[in-house]
Image 1 (cartoon, rainbow, N blue to C red):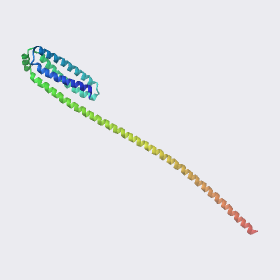
Image 2: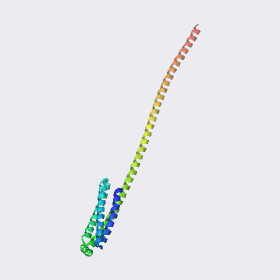
Image 3: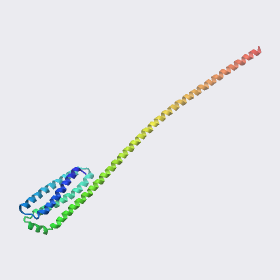
Image 4: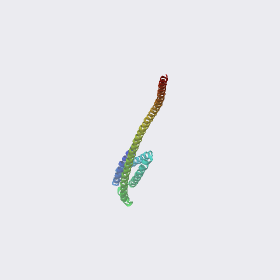
Length: 221
């Protein structure tokens, strides 16, 4: 979640709680004291509305996944702000504190205050659920990053193994070349030995024939 949004959110919750207390206390005031309290309420409502606008701008500048989650939370805050504005109007519409209390009682102010508290409780619950959803999203992102890192590591290992196999293939290819050269040398040596055998055989045959001829000549003479 955006840290800027969280900062605005904390400020709004503090302002909202403060306004709620002031709205409840202004009913028992009168005269200048009530006028001063209403002025403080007006200032607080302006501040709360400004924080709502800032949260809205910040939420809309975020990626779609975070934006949807924060806008849902922002709708709850806007509803809470509308309740506070209605409380302020009812508090400022009456000048006599007794008549104001009677009018508020007749219009169901007690029920509305309870409704406002229920609304804020729902906001807190929604905020907690959204925070939990945000944590789950963060956990999913961490898992995704870990999986991505594992995949990269596996790809690097496979690339290293491929390089090793290519190197082994090149080495075997060189061995095959050397074996081929050795085979050609051996074949050449074999042919040379065969030629030498034929030459030696021819020389021996000539010598034998010469010896036989010499013996024949001697015997005849």
